[in-house]
Length: 119
Image 1 (cartoon, rainbow, N blue to C red):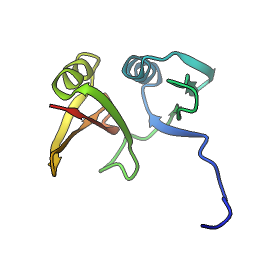
Image 2 (image 1 turned 90 degrees about the vertical axis):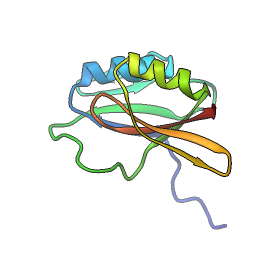
Image 3 (image 1 turned 30 degrees about the vertical axis):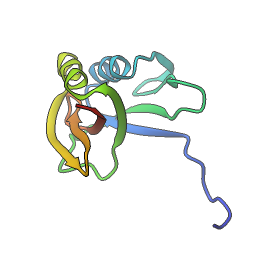
Image 4 (image 1 turned 135 degrees about the vertical axis):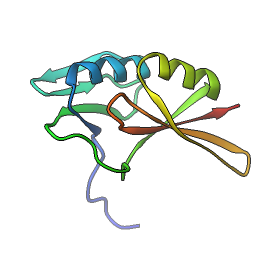
């Protein structure tokens, strides 16, 4: 392994409806907003050492499949999906490989993220 070139500071999600996105992602992750500027918000970390999720307001809608996405874990896939749909998310696809199950979900603007857990 070579010398580190960069360190991940946050994962940024581009959104059009900034307020709706803040409501969705803070509810999904169970966190508040740590810092905010017009059109940009860093959410609180879920735990020490956790990744920071940030939201950035943009003018153009998402097109096509995400090239990068956030993976999350839930205790129960069905319950996780139900709760995500209650706050405005939707199911995109369901997958299983060698006994591991996950679902691709989308936020209200179509930004994809995965939930993995037991069935």
